[in-house]
Every structure is written in C-alpha cells, then in structure tokens.
Length: 279
Image (tube, rainbow, N blue to C red):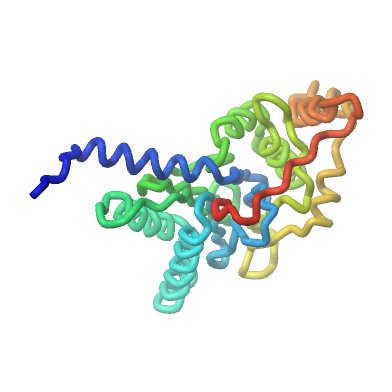
C-alpha cells in the first residue's frame, strides 16, 4: 500500500493562501471612501450581480472574488443581523459584530483541510452619527480583520489603486469628489489609464443625513453620468490647489488621462466576460 506524501502545515497554508489570492486578484477592485456625510463604495461591475449590498440599517457589505461564495456570506450576515436585532435591539447590530462573525467563518474555512478556502475578500462598513464614529472593516480570505480609516481597497489591482488614492484622498471632500476620485483610481493602471463608463459602475453610499432608519442608497447610471461629468476646469483646480484643497491632484490626473491617443477620446474599458464567475 502506497503512503501519502507528507506536506508540512506551513506549506499547506502557503498553498491555500496562494490559491485564494490568485482567485481574488482576478476580480475587479472595490473602493470605499469616507466623506463628511457618510461612506461611499465604488466598484467596476458591468454585470447585474451586485457586489455592494445593504446588510442592516447603517451597515453595508461589499465583496470581491467568487460570487457564489460571497453571496452565501452576505445572506448569512443579513440573517444574523435580523435575528440579533429582533432578539435584542436594532442598536445591538453593529458592523464590528458582523465583521467578527465573518472573520471567524472565513478563518475556520481556511484552516480546515476538508474544503478549499473561500476566494473572497469582504468589506463591512457602518455609518455613525458623525465622521469619527464611522467604521470600515476589511476581512481577508484567511479570517484576518483590519480596521480601515479614510479609504479602503480590496481585490484586483488593490495595490495600484491604493497607491493612487494615497496621494490624492483628503478628508472632507464632497460625495461627488469622492465618487470621481474612486472612479479615476479604478481606471488607473501603470501603463494607460482607462475611462470607465457609468453603466459599468456600481456605486452605493451610507448617507447619515437620510431621515429613514435605513441609510443605504444606490446610485443609478443617469445619476453617475451627472456626477462624473461635473469636473472642475484645470484653471479652477489650480486655483483651488493654491489654497491647499485636495482637488488639484484629482483634476490633474483626470485631465492627463484624457489625452491618451491621437483622437483625443479616452479609451473605454472592455466589456467583461459574462461567463466569468469572479466579479
């Protein structure tokens, strides 16, 4: 009888982590940005399957990776939030509690030798009564949880997008500026920037100014077209930059990215393969 090959635990964990990272990197990035009235989440998503969803009154969920896996996690989070809110109080449902539950679930799956690790990364955002009480948690495929501040990026070319945001994001920017910055960051790459059309974007926000208990709001393509078309002229951005605002770098990048070929038209992002389960 042949004996199975011995594989050290360290090598097993490394192989499982490489497998999960490879799947997540094929998905498109998700960006979350704080602004004075809440948190906005932006993703390039030409499909009708949502990557950004509402979990509870003040809590939103975003994910990247394999759709069937993070959709199961989203449904489990909705059920957990409903049960906790019903059994105790709606105020007892918190983003931190849900992020902890997701971290425990993903950590258990990752360390289990009986099934493959989930190819997903999750973001849980909760809007508070003011900016200082907003919370953004990022949960990785192996159950690690991090508390993000200002902005968070996951999936796809997360490192490139995060580097782009690090020099351009500033606290206090408006919702419109935050959306435009996030879209520019998603279209940025090391070779040639892309212009992502509004119909290929999925944008939602947790708006603390809404009078309803439910603070989640989703933006349509028409509304996004209006937001993305309202860019400051270069001269106005330069004047704004002299006063120390965060606008100049965004406008300079967007104006530079528009001159990509002889026609003067920005390149359009290619359509996604509808058969690809990774979003």
